[in-house]
Length: 256
Image 1 (spheres, rainbow, N blue to C red):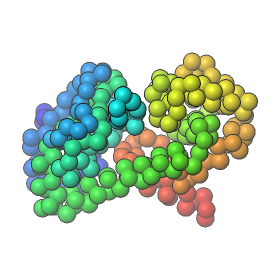
Image 2 (tube, rainbow, N blue to C red; image 1 turned 90 degrees about the horizontal axis):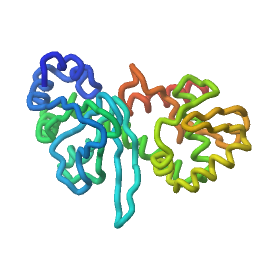
Image 3 (spheres, rainbow, N blue to C red; image 1 turned 30 degrees about the horizontal axis):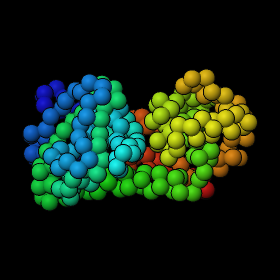
Image 4 (cartoon, rainbow, N blue to C red; image 1 turned 60 degrees about the horizontal axis):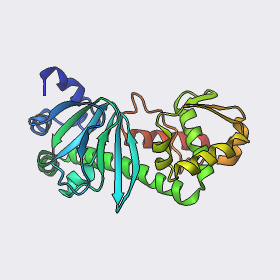
C-alpha cells in the first residue's frame, strides 16, 4: 500500500480509534487494489484470506443453490464485506464481484484476528461493524417476510427518495434484473409491481422514476423505522453502523 494512501485508510471507521501500533500491524501487509468491472473477487465456499473494504465503486454479493442464483446485496462505499467469515476463519457464504471499476482495501484475515485478541479497541470496532451489518440483515429479512412485493417496491422507492434529497424524481441505481433479486421478486413480478404502483402516481421512464402522488404511495407502503433506514449514505456516515446509529437517533427525535 502506498504511503499516500495511509491517511485515507487510517480514517476508516474500523481504524479511527485504534493506536498507531495496532494500525501498523494490521495494515502492514494490506493491499489497496483497483479492479475492473465484472471481476470475481471470491466465490462462496472459498476460504477467506482477506477482509475487503470497498472504497470506491459497487460490489454485488451473490448466492447460489443448484441452478439458481440471486443478488443478496449491492455494496457502495464505504462497506466491509466477508467480515464475519474473517472473524470466524470460515468459508465464504456468498460470492462477490465488481459491478464497475472498484477500489478495494484487502486486509489479512490473520492480522485482523490476531490484533483483535490483543487490542480491545480494534475488537470493539469490529463488533460495531458486525452489529451494523447484522441490523441491516434483520431489516432485510423483516422486509422480505412481512411485506408483499408491491409494498417492498414502494418502500424501496421511498428509501431512494429520502437518501437522494427528498425530491419527486428518483433514479434506479441498478438494472431491473438486479433490483428484482434484491427485492425477492422475479423480473416479471417486478414489472407487475411497477404497473400496480402506476395507480399510486409512480411514473417510470427507463431508470428514472417520478413519485407524483407521494401521500398515496406512503399510505400503501407504510414505512417503518424498525424496517426502513433512511440514513443518507455519505460522509460522515461512512459505515453500516453509522447508518444504524443515525436511524435510531432520528426515530427517537421523531417520537420525542
